[in-house]
Structures are given as structure tokens and as C-alpha cells.
Image 1 (cartoon, rainbow, N blue to C red):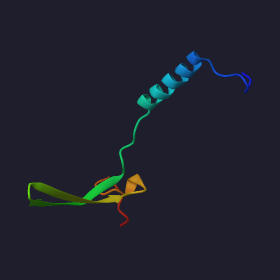
Image 2 (image 1 turned 90 degrees about the horizontal axis):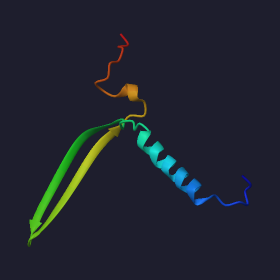
Image 3 (image 1 turned 90 degrees about the vertical axis):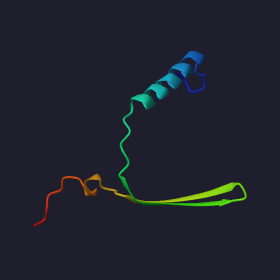
Image 4 (image 1 turned 180 degrees about the vertical axis):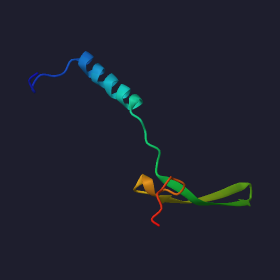
Length: 75
């Protein structure tokens, strides 16, 4: 197909459907993170609730370094 020619509507719809199907079939890896702590602070004043949540996480770049995984000891 020459670059100056426009794609037909049916071709565009087919490509769109293909992209959606590929997104559905693609396996999503679980994130390599572990939640360390979670702190929730709530303040109630004059009928208003202020809620602040702080979540601390550790992200592992190498999935083999996560605690709880079967690792060979160095001893």
C-alpha cells in the first residue's frame, strides 16, 4: 500500500480490534513490590472527615530477591 493512500474504514476497524484483542490476551506480571507499612490518620471536624493514608512499599528490581522466595543459601 502506498504511503499517500489512506487506509479504508474496515482496515482501521480491524487494526483497532486487533489492538484490543492483543491487550486482552497479554499476560500481566504481578508487581515485584511488598507493602512495608500503612498508616491511616482520620480527623473529624464540623461534619467533615479528613483521611490521610500513607503506604510504604519496597520494590524489587530482580524478582528472585523477594523475601519468601526459595533462595539458595550462601553458606
